[in-house]
Image 1: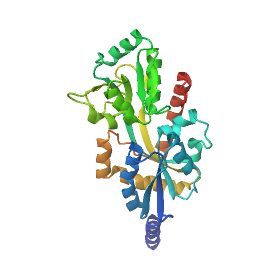
Image 2 (image 1 turned 90 degrees about the vertical axis):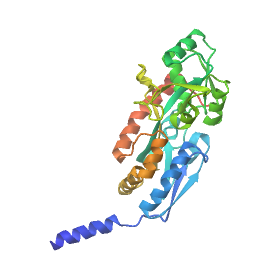
Image 3 (image 1 turned 135 degrees about the vertical axis):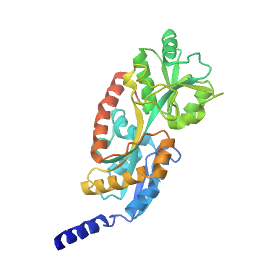
Amino acid sequence: MLGAALAAAACGVLAQAAYPCKVVKLVSPYPPGGTTDILARLVAPGMAKELGTTVIVDNKGGASSNIGTEFVSGAPADGCTLLLGNNTGIVINRNLYKLRLDPVTSLAPIVEVASVPLVLYVNAAESAKTFDQLGAAIKAAPGKYSFASGGSGSPQHLMGEMLKLELKADMTHIPYRGQGPALQDVIAGQVPVAFETTTAIASQLGSGSRIRALATTGSVRSKNLPDVPTMKELGHDNFVVENWYGVFAPAKTPPALVERLNRDLVKVLKSPDVAKSLAEMGSRDVAGSVDQFKQFIAKELPYWESLVKRSGAKVD
């Protein structure tokens, strides 16, 4: 009995062990205001409470998230510097840029935070009311159609390249400095077609809207856009793609510390207020174990590598 009591007490002490950092820097590799930054600021208060420390969101934008991602990759592996990264910085850019550090090997996945499908949409003046009608119009007018994205190498750009491959059609990519300007020019009719996250576009749709959603890239219909079919439903399995976000530590962070961060972050992500905010952003509940996140990333790698090679996509 005494031994069991001592063991239980010891477990309690371990469970209450102070986090090794008084201040945790959670790096967002984008400027303030975007989805990654919003997610970092959403989880930071809960992280601080669970870890018993101060959590500061540090925006290190630039070079399509490479600057902030590399900063965390080269930081001390002590749990004091973490990254809230996304699929662009972790699995896409390695196929487009000559990186000093490969994020896949220089970072340790902790937990997936959010996953949001993309929407294929057109200016409302376009005659196409369905994906098939759009495809027919594009193929009937080689070189006439262009598509917008928030920048070369973004998931939105690469989905446009996938559209070209799927339709075997000629389209021109028009890159912008951010998704906001791209969306505004599709609304204005300057560019006819684009992909965007459900998070950014849902509020722009509805009666009287100047854009029309034709399909989403999720594995299931988006709760934000329940009347819009998925590309998979329409027979295009290559379009089962989502923008995902997760927390990472430098690669040599002790496994026990990574697991502790995972447990605490899962609590944060499943807390009622945070879970509600994520759902309103169009995200599925994706918070799971470290191994689940690692396995997910491993499945993502060949998809993006193949798409970049097949499309010949380049960064400007």
